[in-house]
Amino acid sequence: MKKVITFLFLVSFGFINAQSAFTGKGDTRVNVGANLQDGGSGIQGSIDFGLGENFSVGFVANYLLGVDNFNGFYHGSSSAYYDESPDFSDRFDAKARMNANLSSVIGVEQLDVYPGLSLGLHNFGGHVGGRYFFTDGFGVFTEIGFPIAKYGSNNDPFYHLNNQATFSLGASFSL
Image (cartoon, rainbow, N blue to C red; front, side, top):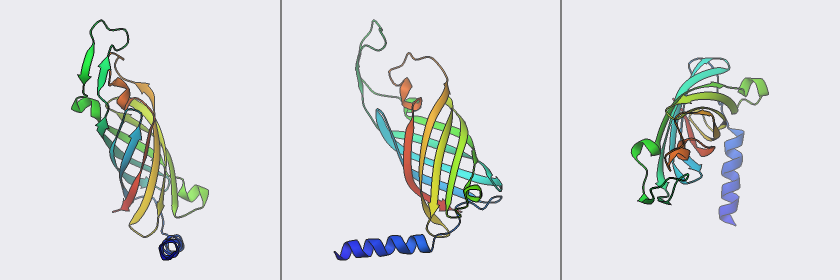
């Protein structure tokens, strides 16, 4: 019971003392967290630089740590794959991105909801995310990313790894 009361106290203290999630030009926000998707899981890191009251640009990178190996025939190929593992290029993706930061629009100073577009090594896509800051420099984030246009052809058993919807969550920091 003590643990539950302590946890509730810390959560309520965090909400009461919450700080601005995005204030505009000059803001720098860093997100670090887990990336979850079909066929693998990994880490994601991103950085966003505020250019205006409701606009930021930045970069995001993902690296899949746990990926299932592939066995069998892929898309009707005549040659079989036996315990095929993905290369670095199959596991890694980097993107430039731009966001519309909506904390001032929705009127909740501590919560930054940010839809945006990204242009990466594997696709052109979109994302929708949210950050909530408990203190001046620390918060949490969650983000969903999705491809709009994919590059290349679907002739590799690991083509789908960076060309699908992803879900990320983790910690957010203000620099």
